[in-house]
Structure formats: C-alpha cells, structure tokens
Amino acid sequence: MSAPDLVADGTVTPTKDISEKKMDVDMAAVTDSPPPPYKRASIVHWADLTESTGEIAEKEADDISSLGASEHVDLVESTENHSQNGSSRGSVTAGKPKSNGLARPDGGLGRPLHAGTKSTTDYPPLDDAAGRKAAARERERMNAYRAGSIRFAPWNIPYRRRLQTVAVLAHSLSIAVTFSFFFFLCANPLLWPILIPYLLHMLLSKSAVDGRLRARSERFRRSPIWKFFGEYFPAELHKTHGLPPTRKYIFGYHPHGIISHGAFAAFATEALGFSEKFPGITNSLLTLDSNFRIPLYRDYILALGIQSVSKESIQAILTRGGPNGEGMGRAVTIVVGGARESLEAQPGTMHLVLAQRKGFVKMAVRTGADLVPVLAFGENDLYDQLSPQRHPTLHALQMWVLRTLKFTLPFLHGRGIFNYDVGLMPYRRPLNIVVGKPIPVRQARSEGEVDAKEVDRLHAQYVGELERMWEVYRGVFAKERSEEMRVIR
Image 1 (cartoon, rainbow, N blue to C red):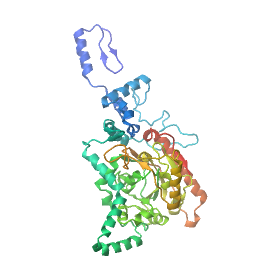
Image 2 (image 1 turned 120 degrees about the horizontal axis):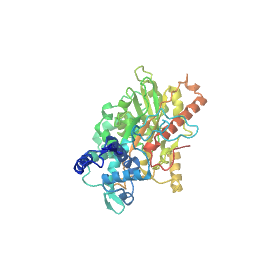
Image 3 (image 1 turned 180 degrees about the horizontal axis):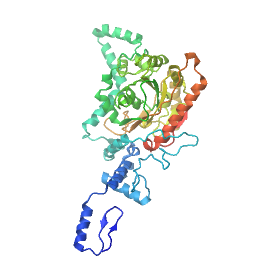
Image 4 (image 1 turned 60 degrees about the vertical axis):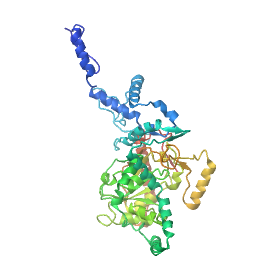
C-alpha cells in the first residue's frame, strides 16, 4: 500500500487502494472535525478587519446597504476576496507568527517613515477595540427605519445604550441646565439671602487658580455615569509609556475637535481608567477662566477637578501638592489648539494649530514639568461642520468673532437623540486617545531665565513626537483619513 497523501490543511487522505467503505468513514470524520486552530485564527482576524474603524462612519443607508445583512455573509466574502487577490494580510502560515497589523518586515512598527523622521520602534502596537465595538452598532443603522433621508433609531435599543445617550446628553446640556436653574432659583425671593452670598463667593473665589484642588471629588469622578459617557462613542485611553509619579507633567491634547469630548472623558473623569493606567498622578483638565463665572456650572466642573488654563493656575498646580509639596505627581492637560483649532475640525482630517503655540512649552520650562503629547484619533469625526473652503464668508465671520470675543461659533451638526442623522449630539464614532512618550524638561533657575532657544528645541521635539505617533498609529486608528496630519499656524 502506498504512503498516504498529506493535503494542505494537515489532514491525511487515504490512497486509492483502500476500500470504499473505510474511505467514506475517514472522510466523514475529517468533514465533521473543527477547522485547525491556525485557520480559525485567520478567520477571526479577517472578521476584525471587516469591522474596522472606517466601517462605522455615518453613511447614507443606500451607500452601506451593499455590505450585506448578516455577519456570516460578510465573513465569507471577505475571506474569498482575500484568497482571490492573493493578499497575505492577516494570514498565518506554518512556522510564522500571526501579524498584528503594525509589524513591518524589518521588525519596526507602523508605516514607513518619511525621510528624517526618527525610529518609532519604542511605541508598542495598539488594538482598535473601540472601532470594533462601534462597527457592531453600524449593522443596526443599516436597517433602521427611514423617513426621507433621516434614519430613526428602533424602539428596542438595549437599556445600557439609552443610559449612554442620557450621560452624553446631560453633559452636553450642563451649561444651559445649570444657568437656567440658577435663574429659576432667583425668581424666588426667599432664596435671595442664600444666592447673594453665593454670587459674592463665586466672584471672589480662587478655587480655580490656587492649585489646592479642594473642591475635587474623586467619588464624583468615578461615578458610573461617566462609564456610560465613555461607552457612548466608545472611547479608549491607550498608554504607550510609563509615567513615574516622581515627576510633574503637562499633557498636550490634540486635536481640539468641536467640544473635546475625548479630553473630558480621559482626564476629567475616571471613565477610561486614567488613575489605573498612570497610578500616583493627579491630573487636572484645564478650561477657560470664564467658565468659572457661570453659577452652579462652576461647582460642577470644580468637583471634576477641572481648573483654569491661566498661567497663575498652571504654576500653582505644578508647584504645590504632591508628596513633597512641590508638585511632584501632579499633571495638567491643556487642549493646545483652542477655539482656533475647533474651526479646522473636519471628519477625516487632523489639522493641528501648533506651529506658533509655545506658551505651554515655556510653562514646562518654568515649572520643570515634562511634556507629554496626546493624540486623539476620532475627535474630529464626532461632528460635521461647514467647510471653510466652501463657505469662506461664514468662516470670516467666525474668525472675527474669535478675535473680538475670544470664543467661536461653530456651525455644526451631529446626530439626534432618536435618529442617526440630524441633531446636536455627537456621532457614535470611536475615540482612541493615545498618550505618547514623555519629553524630559529641565527647569529654569528663575522665571526670567527661560531660554528662547531651549523653548524652540523642546517645541520642535514635541511636534516631532506627535508626528511619530501619527506615523505609527494612523494605519490602526485613522484608516479612513482623507489626508495626512498637518501642523498649521
């Protein structure tokens, strides 16, 4: 009897001289057995690819209905296309480890770097779990009830999804609700003996700038409502390097987006587990000082540990508190681009207003705080707004308001509470907030001895670190980008 033949999937087929009955039995056993482990791994990997971040964009139902109605059909078609075009992406062969989607043949991470860019091998590979969660929800939107061009959410949405919407809605309306409720209280003269002292306290209080964080409530920051807030998009906080609590830090958050929902979820609450990823560090998100002049709303953000973005506040936070009373273990998060950058927020783009912004670097030199770049993939995708190129007159009006009143009026729209296409709620699109490698900063001997050349050097190093982060992770978290990251004035 000739030796049995070995087929590609590792099973043994009998030779022709074996009886027909034994052949039937053997083939039935092979057919009923589960696929080999390496094949199951390949299929799962391709299923993940079909549910990538790009699949969850809010598209018209006509554009996305061709994706198919069942997960099984998508899986089979994806695997078949993989076989037909000859691509080896995500496949595993005997003796070779499974690719993580980031590895290059030379052992590096991410895509090839531009000339002059430093090596990126010190950044670990990250997983787009948030993108897969959001992709699963997109299947519900494909078959949603439509009235004209508006898709309405079904009534049988899970209870947890409704709580997520309530959490985001409550925070989005927090200024309007607290301000309106205060004037409602003012309508009752019996409350004036309480409200007048409160107003005097609000005007004279230094809680937002003294760096003591007395109003900060860790219990409020860990409230379950913020878990629902983070799950709405969903949002994920990615740690790439450790931050020892024996140092102080200035986190630079990019991009601003329209409302900076990612910065709020990651650094003003414990929704994404900041204290677990960076133990021993007390981080404070910074906002405009004018927000602390809004009755009741100021108490809301102070309880979350949010502080003023003024120079006095930053210096106080980073020079007080901590184990030694000198600010060690303290950190602040600054949304560097500000209102100007919010006008550049367009889905699929990453425009950073950073070329001339060096004030945060000067503060780092004055206080001896290390600089930590933070890149939020998906922040610009949460809303749609009018394009400055297509509507130059409205953009000029926005810029005039920004120069005159120091705030901007974005012409935006998102989704609604009960529909997927029209409203002021942010889209349910994944947020991946990547905390980069810290840049060591040596403190100046005195405030007047800040060297301009040192500031320029640190600023260039900071921008270069952001570019490295973009090079490594754009293929994971920004697959549907329309252009590359740009640093502008």
